[in-house]
Length: 299
Image 1 (tube, rainbow, N blue to C red):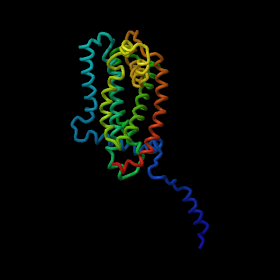
Image 2: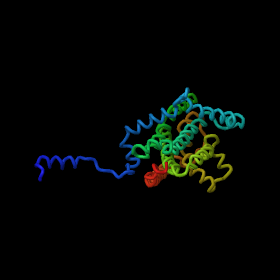
Image 3: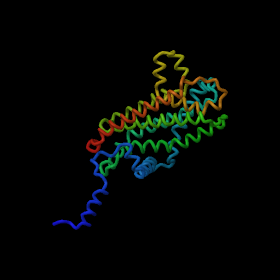
Image 4: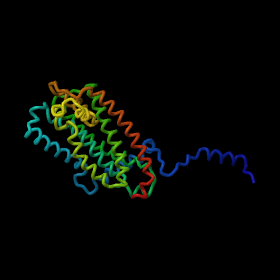
C-alpha cells in the first residue's frame, strides 16, 4: 500500500523539520549552555533562593564576610604593621584587590560543589552539566556588583576620576578572573564528583590565593625579597597578580599622587594571561565533557 502524494510529502517535510537527535550525555558544552539561557536564568534564581533559604539577613551574609576581612586586614596590616603609612589611600588599595579575590574564591568554591549539590536534578533530567558551574559564576557576579559599587564610591571619595585606560584595565582584570574561575571551576567540579577531597583542596587553596596576589601588600615587597630572578617572574606569572594590579591601576591609582610602580608590561601581561586562560577553558571543557557521562552513576 502506497501513501497518497500529499501524505508522503507531509511525512518527508515533518522528518526534515524534526530536531536532530542528540546522543545522551552530549549537550553541546558551554555553547549548549548559551543556547539554553532561559534554563540558566531559572538555575541562577534557584541557586540564589536556596542559598539564603531560612536566613534572616539573606544576601547580606555575602557582604558580611568580606567586610570583616577588610576590617581585619585594615587594622592588622594597615594600622598595626604600618602599611597605611607606606601606601597612599590604603583602604582603596586594599579593597580594589579584595573585591576581585573574593569574587574568584567564591566562584571557585561554589563551582567546585555545583555538580554534587545538584545531584538530584542531574538524576532526574538531562541538561548540559556545564550549566551548573556557569550558574555559580553568574551568582558570584550578582554578589560582585554591589561590592564594585562600594569600591566606586570609595574611589570617588579618594579623588578618583574615570578614564579610558582605567576602564580598559578594569574590564581586562575582571575577565581574567571570571574566565580563570570558569576554567578551574569546570575542572574541579568534574573531579569533585569522583573524589570529594577536591572540596577540601579548594578550601585550603582559598587561604593561599588570598596571599598570592598583592592586595594586602605591594608587589614590590616580593621583588625586594626575591630580586629580579625567576622566583619573581613566577610570582608575576600568576594571573591573579595581574588582575589585581589592573584593578588597582583602574580604581586606586587615579586618586593618588602617583609614583607607584606597577609590574612591568602590565597590560601586555594581562592580554597574555587572558589568552592562556581561554586555552585553559578549552582544555577544561574537553576534560569535563569526557567525564560528565559518568556523573549520574557516580552520585
